[in-house]
Length: 480
Image 1 (cartoon, one colour):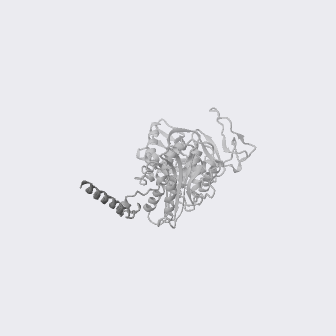
Image 2 (cartoon, helix red, strand yellow):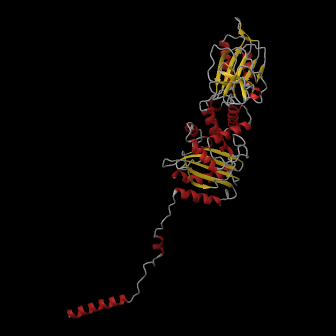
Image 3 (tube, one colour):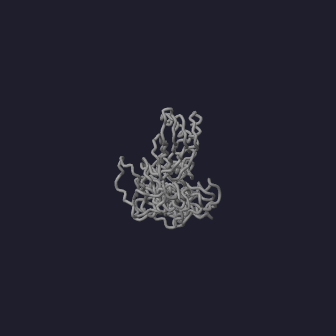
């Protein structure tokens, strides 16, 4: 009986196995929907460069930038190579990124320690009773910040108050003459005298007495030695139009100037006169302005006011995008190089500076120093190469510090607040109607310093909208 049971069990198992063998197998790729969703999809990881280019491609069709004319470039300052670009060779309106040129030229041509001086002197004699039988002189050098409070500049009232104190200390209780306001170039701040003006050496500064059109080459002498303190003869200095070197002549008949340096502080003279009267120091004369002084009388020094340094002025100019200071800087460098205070001389001086430095600015159109004009044109590639070249200059650190920092300072304090670029971008902004620009330096996470330029002309939408697009384009750059 046991053998019979065993036979039936074995037979049943065999039959079951044969039955299973007849069932068709199920392909392994046929599964339930649930199991299909569980299969992981490999994510494509883009490099920072690829991500930038992807962002740029998306922005080409974005409603804000679709019809805009814009250019963008990121530049490797070590390898001197373009990392990525879009329309980088197209001349575009740079708006206030133009200030990069005017502030750089000011640092290069005048130096970071340059200060404008405004000096108080008097002529004549002071009687034992305290009457000054003579004039007060305010000798100005074209300080663009005087009285403005910008960059730490003193107010007109405070300078006049300091002058008043020095007048009292000198024992002056009454003045019979005028307050004469003149212009000058100071020896302790100049690099060289302007090219087209003749100056008479007087105390620690030079007063303008005419132009070089009537200079006789037979009488000029090359300036090689300092004048002895015991030498009372007059010497007239100028950049020789014949040898293009510093020269002087001992005889010069003053002639009319074709230009003057930036407006002397006449307001300071009027403020000082008001304070003198309020302090019961009567003054008989008025405030008089004078351009030339071919025969300056002996004078005594009373006080001087020094402007903030060029470093301070440029920091304020770039942080606040100050148009008035930028235009004054353009005119100042023009004056100190050519003797002409016009916009034209300023533009010519900056362009000449760029050429002397062999900066690649093909296609540059420079109309002003501030960027207010839509006639200004520059290529993004020119900006990044220029910024890279500035890194080799001795004033580069001060120049870099003058630029607003992303999410932190100046005109960039409201951009990149929540971005990885927060604190990593140092750049000059530019804004006009339908124009938004940004150019400067980026410190990457890997320690590189790159230059970039993003110039957008003719965008549609609000300023906030175009700012967000700029942030989007630049977001991956910090990871390069």
